[in-house]
Length: 182
Length: 158
Image: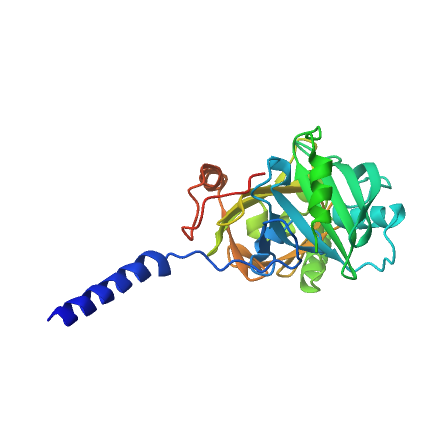
């Protein structure tokens, strides 16, 4: 008698648990395609193709840095480019930026690059770019990009912000994120 | 003379359609010239689309801006990423048969496929909705009650 009561209670608890959790559970989380010492989450374009509707073909997904104090750096786009670059220098850095954000030359440039700076990382020379969207309506976006050769691939992380002026500590924090790659 | 010109125009229009030649436009002025050759869902000057998947709720629009060019805007709420907004200026739209090729000012080209009254993009069906429905969906996304999967709180905000 006591045993069957116990069994019924266990069964009922299990049923309640699956109803509450199992059926309304969130989709599985995507695997992060790189190693970092930061705590991040990742939404891959492969799982949700719609997130890449307006992105360049090199787009792979969105890195979520929920712990960041800077709103502009909480979501960062992850790009992997099939460019043949052996060493990251200023020219290569501009090439990566153009492949993601469009050209900054010609009659109708898509953006304007305002800063290109090289910095050292665990994976050799890396680069940071500041760029501004052009001819955008109603509000042009400001982009901050870090790129480098990560495990024999050209990888770039791109943050964007509608705020026209850079936020304090933004440049350092994005570089720190790139340097956290393992 | 009028009859001959009309017949010629009709033949030209028919041949272009029959051969599946793309109908392209770059701005409002060129759009108005080819509007009659476009599929019904693209003749209203702007397209509003909406969709829901297991992990996100999204609305997007292709609409002219004040400079007479077309913008492609999207807003979605993802169960994990939260609210995300994205936008781009359109350089050219070409319609060929069931395919709608959109080239953004960045040079990126995306292909949507006409599916009934909507569009398909890499396995996702985007329904054509009204401007009002799009506004309502946008408010839902902003309000944050669009979590279709009942997932965690939004952590990312752009």
